[in-house]
Image 1 (cartoon, rainbow, N blue to C red):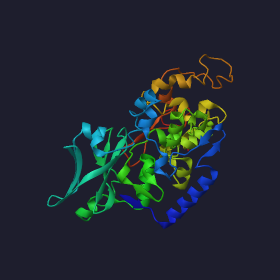
Image 2 (cartoon, helix red, strand yellow):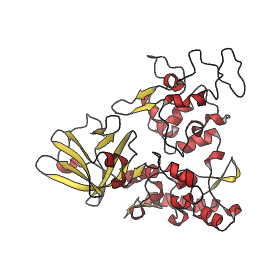
Image 3 (cartoon, rainbow, N blue to C red):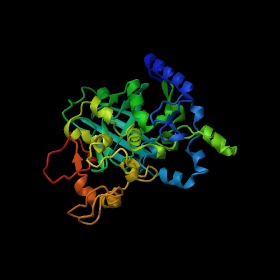
Image 4 (tube, one colour):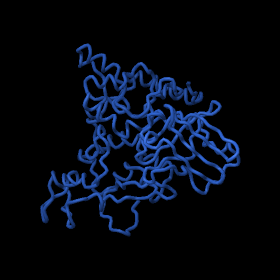
Length: 379
């Protein structure tokens, strides 16, 4: 199935495509060096044939491939039957007023049912969005239209919960209770980060579903690179390597999917709601230094490995910049002052956990600072 995104968007994408061709297949030179080509994770796919698929990458990069496929990024979207959450919890339900919402994993498929006690609507779950490390939501198709279920799975509670403002009025009918009807733009907004390889030109191609954020989401289309390497012509290879990005470029690159600074400003977010943007919070840190490669997302987070949850595991990163002995002078290697309190579990004090109002989600605040309990949230 192909979803049309509208004539206006088609013209925008066509113009972008023509400009990309003029620049050389959509790649722009990066400041990282002539050998490095600029790519953005949410770049619209113009030619599906440009993609080789992660399995092709595995021939040369087996260890990285095997590690990356276990990450939450790789599970950013999944076919319902392959969802780790739904395999672990084959039956989930949630009640709100007269309505009961349920998910059932059975016989290699997942069904979503909404009932008002008298009648019910049941549809297969087309796709799950989110790895479930924080939460996971569900997309269904009903009478040719995509819907997002009004319930999410929340890992902190280990169960389904309402995915919208609790003050939202109860649906007036069973049909209205089914979920949020998605526009063409809404579908694209979901998949531009969770399944970007399926956004093709002016539409979304569900017949060749490639769920999740795998190799080519961050490294760009790899068919040309694979062909060159197999032909023994590495100098003709074209592939993007984010390692060469400057700190501010990498922060912008990662925030293409992880709530950019522009999204915060465009959404007019204020107060604790800004915590959803790690990039916005990080660049506001006193220790942020665009000239220091340690001010990169990848300095603390390996994009090829599962996210480390234990705060103490990041101590070595903190002490990579901060002096470890009292009275030690600042230096290029250690520009940060030593902490007078301790040198263990640094992030627990300096990157506090922040709950978002009207939400079950708690974020780690990436604005690194001295944050005594009870102090106001800095914006």
